Length: 130
Image 1 (cartoon, rainbow, N blue to C red):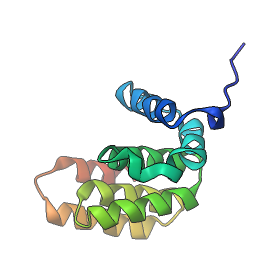
Image 2 (image 1 turned 90 degrees about the vertical axis):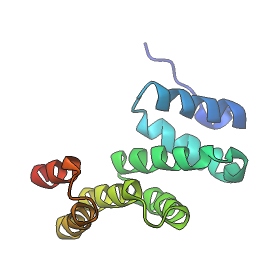
Image 3 (image 1 turned 90 degrees about the horizontal axis):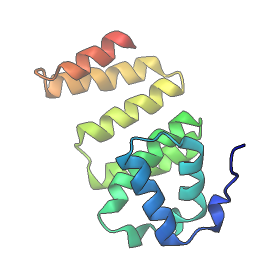
Image 4 (image 1 turned 180 degrees about the vertical axis):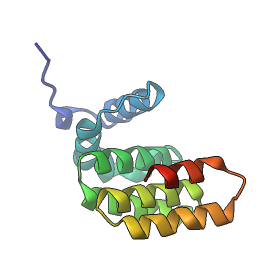
C-alpha cells in the first residue's frame, strides 16, 4: 500500500530538501513537484537564493509532464528573465511548445538552437525525433 503524503503540510526546508533529493536522484515526481512548488516554495522563492534556478527548471519539466502549462509559463518567464540567452531555457521553451501541440514553433526554436551551436548533436537529435 502506498503512503499518502500531504505535500502542503511541510516546512519550507523540508520542501526544499525534498525537491533537491529528487533532482539528485533523477526522480520524476512531477505531480508532487508541482504541488510542492505551488503550495510552498513559490511563496518563498527568494529564500531559495541561487537554488531557485534549479528548482524552476525542475518545476517547468514537472509542469509540462502534468500538462500544467500555466505553471510552466510562469517559471519559464522567470528563467528567461535571468538567463535570456540560455540554450537550456530555450530547450525548455521548445519542450512546452511541443507539449501544447505547437510543433512548428518548437521546430523554429530548435532551428535557432542549431544555428547558435552547429556542433552540438543534441539539437539535431531532438529535431529528428520530433
